[in-house]
Image 1: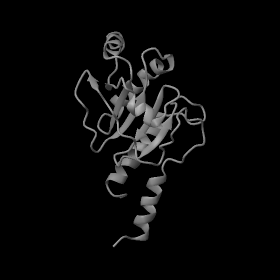
Image 2 (image 1 turned 90 degrees about the vertical axis):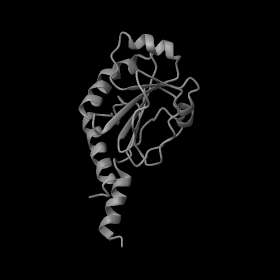
Image 3 (image 1 turned 30 degrees about the vertical axis):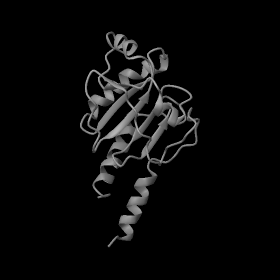
Image 4 (image 1 turned 45 degrees about the horizontal axis):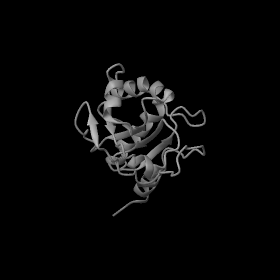
Length: 174
């Protein structure tokens, strides 16, 4: 039998964090909805990461993008800090050789994926990069947008909160 408290907790978890009205730089808003399938042709520097039970930060990026390059140290920091609960995937539609060459001089301590067909990017309708999505273990997008947007930046505190709420949801809200 489901209790009112359990229903209230479940409803609260589905709504976290509050959706901020902002420019997404994407045609489709997945916040609070099921995440799109992550389409990958090639994984660089390792195998497909284990996503079960993890929060996923999907970062659409390119080697030529200055703001994308500027976020790499923060992504490295978050992957190290939240290594047990977070998988970061940098998804580029560039040729693997271009990204491999870039990685020779730039440390990227998270999973790097290539999809030259940009299938996931097209599904999201990404109009500007970097564009990120934070997906909790239940497959719901909890944050989406330009990570450095002043109106709703993706911060360590926000990521920590989303990871904690995702873990609570996985435990059944307890």
